[in-house]
Image 1: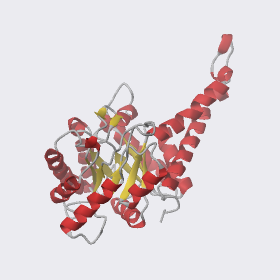
Image 2 (image 1 turned 180 degrees about the vertical axis):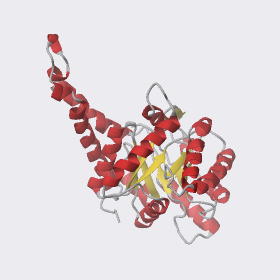
Image 3 (image 1 turned 90 degrees about the vertical axis):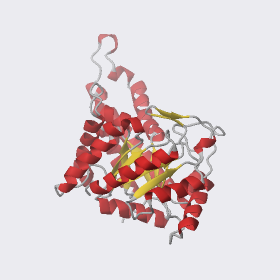
Image 4 (image 1 turned 135 degrees about the horizontal axis):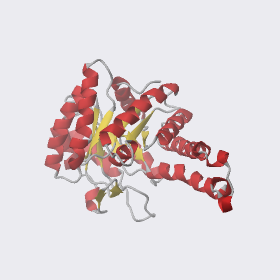
Length: 341
């Protein structure tokens, strides 16, 4: 199937919330990791989300070029071609974009998608994330209002973050403290600023102790009940017909316990970001391959090595297969396996 249209993507997210399941959102930084993600979703019988961070976008443009917009559009163009060979819907998303990178990342991509849509085409990406966690809530929501309007023109869904995700990802770092927990008041302020769908479709990353990376047990305390409290507060304040008015996003999902994932999904999470776990799944078999085939991948003691073993496709296939298997596991944990309509 081709990359999801705006209508198909919105339906994907609505079905997830109504059916109490969520899609893994897999960070990619190469054609290999993209292909692994596509295969993983297809093997799981699940639609899915593929996303690129600012650092991943820079890398995709060429490590010496570091052009986030060029890398993002290159990924999107490649994905539009190869995804149509898989029997599931795939949405493309850009991950964390802090304030100082909006003008060099999200805004130019929105402008490019708007021009494409005006010409009768589809946006390059189906959703973009604005990470306002480092600015005061009022400023965060003001910028979100502006971006939501731009997203509507581009037929793109906006993702915002209300609260703070601990740890570090692509240079965005936060301490692990009480700021990691969004409040019901934060949720109500978000609904007042952005509406509940009438001003444009958006997803909300409320934080409940999330961190980027993997931490030892006991170092991080997730409180999924924070999400329920936020949904309940907005439902009560605005009298929404849906008891879960927000489409929620789970950041820092790597290393989470199954029961924590289940609770978060029950409270309205429709998208869970996974990066650390799939990075390891991709890299671990490469390490094993190199150690096992040491004399074949290196020209030891003047020998010629084994071309079939040092061919990047040989170890690349193993890396992609392992990453795809980890994505199937994620789909199963999130109850998305077998939900492709």
